[in-house]
Image (tube, rainbow, N blue to C red):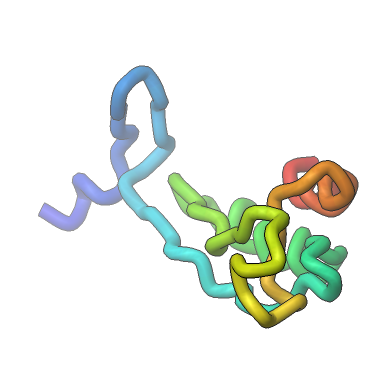
Length: 88
């Protein structure tokens, strides 16, 4: 039965190479809400190890009441370069 974990899996048109999914765990590594090279490297290592699906950490909208912690990544126009680094 464990061998099924290593087989491809299709979910709503997305084909995963295996059934391993990794939850987000890079909390508080984005000063000013912008993901850094540390965040990008964290996700790169997981992808290189063959994880089938990587779920990025929680993000916040750009609103002062979203959270008081500025090291949690944001989704906003001025954070796009940081997220591009993660995606690349």
